[in-house]
Length: 112
Image (tube, one colour):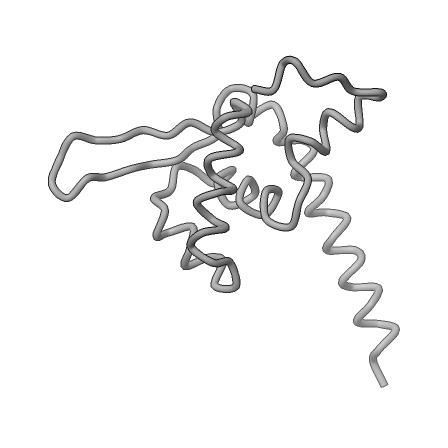
């Protein structure tokens, strides 16, 4: 967590943690339960492996997700929402609901 960073308003802190193209999308997928890296990658075909790794690391550093490594061969790594990440669930739900309404509105406007 970046505790030394100063924020002017609370929304700035929120966006520092979940802002960017992929973080909210990754969090939405993890809200359905723990996933391995390759499972997340399959659900996000447009994300590069490098960007997925970076996104997961940043979310882990900020305490939003946890990374569990199982001692087996080959190694198994699972990501899931932490307690702090679970507290984002209502926000993620609202983002998804808003997105559905927006997509419906756009579809109606572009329909012949």
